Amino acid sequence: MRLIDKILLLSLFALSFLMKVSAAPIPRLSLAVDHAPPYSQINEEGDITGAIVDIAEAIQARVPFKIELVACPFPRCLKMLEDGEVNAMGGLIRTVERQTQMHFLMPPYMILSSSFVFYGRHDSELAVQNYGDLYGKKVAVMRGAAHFKRFDQDQKLEKIEALSEKNAIDMLLKGRVDLVVAVEETAEHSMSVLNQPINKLKKMSYRYDDVIYGYFVLSRQFKNTPLAIEIEHHMKLLAQSGELTDLVAPYNLPPIEQPTLGFY
Image (tube, rainbow, N blue to C red; front, side, top):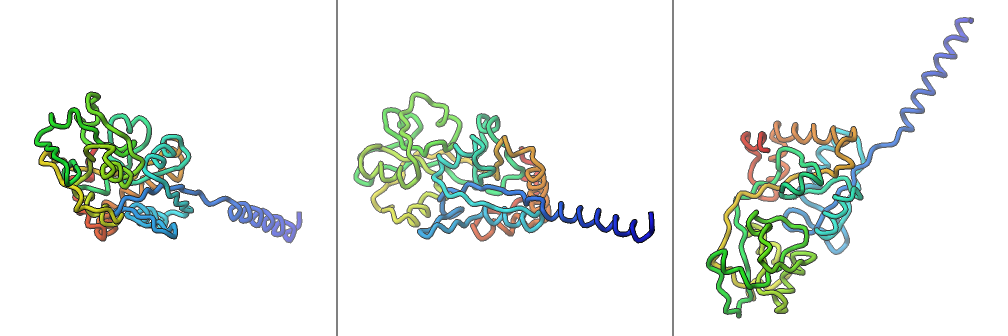
């Protein structure tokens, strides 16, 4: 074969390879986001913002992929994640049951030293001074949400599922339930954003103090894909470099301390 023919043939091979590379599809991450101010918000125009979005975009700057943001109520987001209809979700509390249904990325990016508290109507004569006082009361809980172990596993309590935090408060104000359980750190801020009347509620004396961890979570169907492996790797790098702390700081979340990096 003449030299010119060899050069032409090699050029054709190189061109063919480049065309195949350029034609390769960019991987996609579908990220479910619920309206949970201040950590994630969906405005009236449908714009989606929040800590988990910022983290996904920071990883996207290191790894080429497309982000598809999916706005949904919390129960729907959780169901889509469990069914593999979306790849990821943020802000979830880890439980034994959830660990069998989804994959939690380490470390947690949300760390709240807070309390689970119970709200009643301001004009109610109810008093909840200890856990036992919850019995015989109708307590609104957001469908699919995790609280503290004793409460979540207690089948003697009458728990009424709500589709959202707003729905739960509305049920309380309309007298359909006696109490609403909420995370104290975020509840009143959420109610102010949702334009709900905090002055019509009263906080009960009983509370359950806890350190609450919120995670970036992947679906079972997605977790072993090349993109998922890259996302998990870079999530750890963001934490180790301190960039993850910078990303959550605007949401008044505490820094990701070194002990937390080994949390499991």
